[in-house]
Image (cartoon, rainbow, N blue to C red; front, top):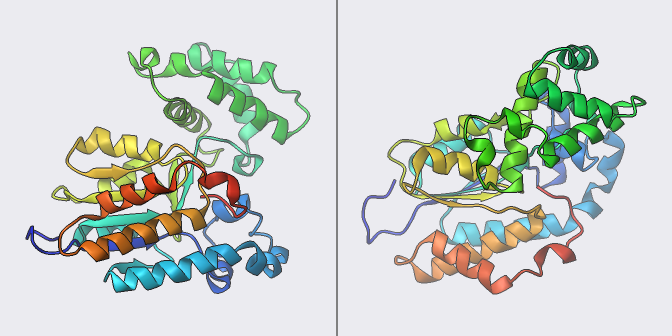
Length: 305
């Protein structure tokens, strides 16, 4: 990383989602589960013919972003893996991660063989965790896996698992997103190995937990990490707990279309390039975001990260 204050920042763009028809087809052929594709119905091969129309705005935004990133001499990692993320963090001052964050919500696709037997066993135990699962049972019609997930998500988002939080955490005034994330961790631990885990960053080689991302950051990294992913404040919390103010983390609490994120990143890189060698990406990125205002999410129709 750059140690000279009068030298321009070295910026890396790590892209963990497919941004072309070819990359979508590559991801579909991969044996690695693709939750982002499942969420946007792209995993169904019959949908490939609709990819161009669905992602037209994404492709246009990506082309403009790459042109601006190249002009700013940023390193671009397409079809990025965990190894790419580690390489970027070890050699750059600012790392932008454009990827899917798998949050706390549970879908029927997450349920693995044996989940119902495991659930029935959990109901027989004593303690606050089993009390929470009994509330899930009481809210479940028993008719389908989908209705089970609906009841489980109500419990996760409604605070049914707060009594299971570590000592003192249940009394903290935390954000709903963080509370749901902690609840999902409890559910994952209880159902393991009969449930796909939540709270993970999806790259081309699969899902990576918050702990794995924290471990990927070199101890001497003092730069900027732009988490351009949906509801990335959960991952940002993990990073701030581990590193405090040693690094700058840009995150959000919202579900954000990838084309919008690309436009914001493009603006930040453009502004940074105009100000070089002075200036930094974090300041430029925030300035662009502030100028755009809060109108952003309502006018986009593409998939979310």
